[in-house]
Amino acid sequence: MPTLPAQLIEDTSAYIAASPTAFHATANAVRLLDAHGFQGLEETACWHQPVPGKYYVVRNDSALVCWRQDADCSPADGFRMACAHTDSPGLKLKPAPLLAGQGTLRLGVEVYGSPLLASWFDRELSLAGRVSWQDPAGGLHDELINFQRPLAIIPSLAIHLDREANGARTIDRQQHLNPILAGQGEDDKVDFLTLLAHRLTEEHPGRTREKILDFDLFLYDIQPPHRLGLSDELLCGARLDNLLSCYLALRALLEAPGQRSCLLALYDHEEVGSQSQAGAQGTLLESVLRRICPTKEDFYRCLAASNLLSIDNAHALHPNYADRAEPQHAPQLNRGPVLKRNAGQRYATSSRSAALFRAACARADIPLQDFVMQNNLACGSTIGPLISSGLGVVAVDVGVPSLAMHSARETAGCRDMELLYQAIRAFFTPEPAGRGASCLAP
Image 1 (spheres, one colour):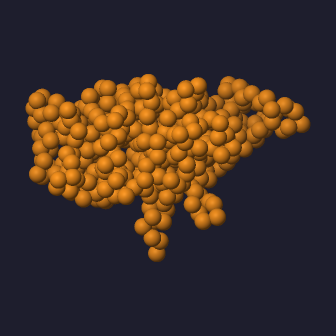
Image 2: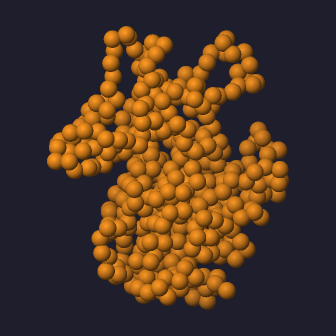
């Protein structure tokens, strides 16, 4: 029987492997919430002011908010909130994806977000996502699809045909990223929508689909996450940014002790700017909080009394590129979660919010590391500043240190994953009496 830390790594890896898209990540989160007695609410239904309990709401099949409201707390007392994102950089199929020619059948793709494109070459790729279809009565439906087997590959150009490949390689996003789906003879015909219909029948039998209308499909590396290192101390896999954070935050919410109202928001489209119905610049969290709070006054009191933990992977010190790290703020693998700071507010952390998180980690004996980007390098951002500025919530940005962020396969430390889980759980746990306030409001 694996120990708790080992089981946590196995469970996280299984969640990531089963979640090749934001749609699947959300569906798998819902299954876990259902198993723990959470009640699903529809945005189109009348909620009638939910009584204290455990709830969740899903938007666009790719984002959700779940919360646990303690019976002894009113919404105006605020929530301990955490957020992460369900999407990852990659390659998305175009609406008319089949490209025939040169003896092959290829897939036309768009680049989603900012992936390390070179890492997608020579990998066994599959397809997954959401398909929208019409039944014989004209009703519209959505179903998730996952081929779960190698379907395509983006072959590199042999070095004999590009002698500068190891020194001055360029990747044309339009010409060089189209995966080969099949070899093709002159008489071979493939109808992509028929291919989707057959796969839907295999995954979801017993339904009559008259017509496939549209789809949101993504390529993904078929290889699941694997532990590696002399002591299995590292985890390497796709989509660690940011499904690792999603799962650990979800587990922490489910397993933290009661007596505090807690909330978790998992958003889509972070990698492309968050400006969408399911993104952090949308209305999802605000809509939920307004419906939870009985009055407008309670809503504003809730925001003022709440604290937000924005969880997204951080850059670890790369031993082969140590000159790219800020010397005094260079997190290392398996040394603990990272507090992220930026003077330009690319991260939401302030001394006030950092103090709250440091205090929670100190109570649980969790070591922390600090990250600041070098002045001569552009700093990335997270959904933390978007939510903090949009709702006026005190927020702090944290995450596990990782290598090869936005690669088709990223690397993180297993001990950091365990420590981040414990840190989020400590953040959700009420402070002992006399050990400080639950919120650092002015």
